[in-house]
Image: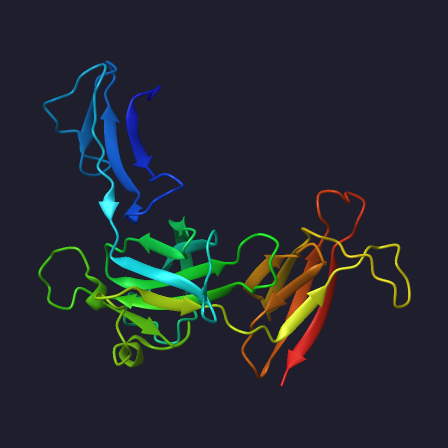
Length: 273
């Protein structure tokens, strides 16, 4: 229930079990000084004739246009978390071809079902990133998938799966990405966990020599220069694994878990030939 006059965004999310791959939907409501509420198209719009107190509103969940299956080899991976982010930059969609002057807007995400399926919705032209997080306490490594979505037929309708292309990397230009494969609209597109090429083991601060008491649930950040590349919790063996591009140097920042409040953050560096 809104408390003060102004604009409010209400978001409805599908339940944990989501076999139809429905996606979240948001609506904006306006409350005037008298406490009456109505639904509006955008913040700043106060022209509505159905204002009431109380106000009843139906929110319909949207269907997904980005449907896929998460794999590890030939196995489906259930109960993983896939985040969806939109790339933003000050130059516009086509200007920053190096993909360097960018930041990411968090849009939400989806858990994979027990069978590894997931569904999300892309509604606007732009570059997007899927951040795939493995199920808790596994040896799989977090990875990202980069996408370019464009309403190529300019029909003004919702972007279709056939208008979403898979970019080879974050830095690939839009022109090059337009030559790549599209997200499958006929059958589920499959994305797979890559093989890890870096493994970090976090040990207790009181260990010495070759002794290692594993520290689970410690958070490990990865940086390339000043850019954050990714991160992962350690599993019950104290291990965090990453798949990182070759030919660069990386800095790993290890943070203590909640059970070790007197632990210190530690940094180390490594290069991948």
